[in-house]
Length: 301
Image (cartoon, rainbow, N blue to C red; front, side):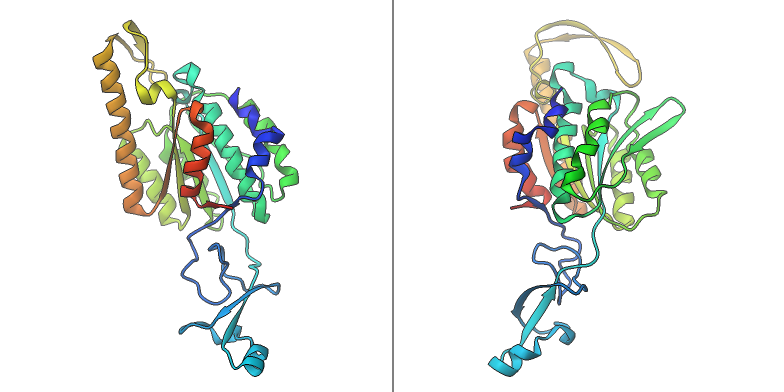
C-alpha cells in the first residue's frame, strides 16, 4: 500500500528542512515571523529589520538607535503555536478505481504534510472522515509536536480502510464541535460530493477562522478516463445503485472532461474564498505533485 511509504527514511529525507507557512497573520507588524506565523510576543529574539511607519514602538531597539541613529525593530519568536489538523477522506469512493490507490496517495501526502508541520513543533494531528452506519464517523489521532513522535501516526495511517459516504459537511461539523483555537485545516479528498456540500463545509471552516488548504486527490485512470473499452455493470460504491454502461473512446473523453470540469469548479470556489488549492492527480506523478503542489500549500524550504 502506498501509505506505508510515509514512514520510509527516503521519503522523510525529502521532507527534512521543509516548513509549513501560514498566511493568517502576515498583516501583523512588529514581531511577526518572516514566514507568516503568529505574531511574536515571546521572549526569544529572532531577527531585526528597519522601522516602517505604523510599527509598534514597543519593539524599537534603543541600543541601535543610540549607536547608529537608526530606527530598528527587534522581532521575537512567537510563543503561540498553531494547531494543524490534516483531514483525509476515507469514504468508499477513495477506493475506486482499485488500482489507483487514491486513499494510499491521500494518506501519504497527508502524513507528509503532518511531518512538515511538525518542523516548528506545532501541534499536528491526523483525522479521517466518512459517513458510516450509525452516523458520521470522524476519527482523530492525538496531537503530536515533535518529529520524533511522527512514527506514532503509523497505526492510524496503515490501518485506515475505505467505507461509507463522504458527507464532508457533517465531518466538519463534528470537528468544529471541539471548539478549539482556530488553526490550519488541510483537507485531502476526491470531493465527489455536490458543490453545495463542499462549499458549505469549507465555508464553515473559514467562518470559524481556520486557514484552509485543499488537496484534490484523483486517481490516474479516474483523471484520464483510461479504462479498457467494453460493456460494464457499474455499482455506485457509496449508494449501491447499479447501472449498465458501454465504454469506448467517446466515453473516455467524456470522463476526462468531467474530471477537468470538477477540478475547475472546485479550484474556482477556492480562489474566490482565499483557500489554497492543490491537485494530486495520480500516484504515478507523486514526485511531480510534491515538487509542484506543495509550494502552493505554503510549504517552503
